[in-house]
Image (cartoon, rainbow over all chains, first blue to last red; front, side):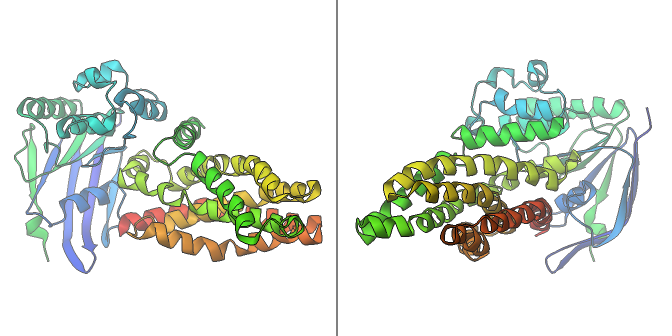
Length: 194
Length: 219
């Protein structure tokens, strides 16, 4: 398997009139993880969206040798459908990855008949986790991944990310909460504020 | 191809399954209701209605096209569908092109069917009805494309729904002129021009829509 890599050079981001950060560079190799910290509004989510290719940076480049997955606070499932049915769409799109076993891995299998709009915050988060990276992209961008998860689910998920990294994948976590993963480096966006 | 099929299946299920996009039924009922109002407003004069009826059907179709606009793209952008498509390498243009096809299927053919009772209500002649049906076949893809482009451009605006209606009316005027114009001249040239405008609009719509969605994400 080709080793995964990410190289971010001299990145700057502007939202509206405000320059959020500039001169941001880092590199990530397979098996490594990075936590982006910083107060609210310093551009953690924007940085992830730039790396995901959803936002254009003001300056700088992102070079990536792999596919990318994004977990954020949105859940791209049809609200009126039962959870299992709603996942069928992504199952067709991603060539599998959302069967009963996959749902079971996130403790969602008992909820397959429940319409998405009736799910709790934590259940929605677990569904979003499954949806974001069931296809095992090389780089997993996690925007506040522990929000809404209970203690057990949070511990499970951090273990899962650890195992994911051990297989040679990469992850970037944007969160001001502590996140436990082996070899997690920290990058404080406040250091790159203008 | 697998991606296109998966997208189309979801879009059609949402539009025909009475999903959150209001379904295909609502615009059709609105269309018939509008056509039904005219005899009440102008009086039951069969000569007058038969003369104006074709135009009335066209105006009703145009108004019905406004109805589904605010549900066409905005919910998908809000819920992050477009983000998840993008990180999977599925272009916005492809999603919009599939949505255009699904939107037309849920709106063009049902409207053509609904034109039959509407024509009966207005007492249209058989050959007028035939021209109207051909005109709708040629014109509704264009209406769908205009609607989709407007939905994409207003996707991030708060008052998007109201604005979409206002924007659609002037942009649909060329379709109306040639489509409804074919009724008075009785010629095929009007229909051909309507179809030409429709094809052009359908060709532009995926690219304009895709660019508008990317711009909305930046905003």
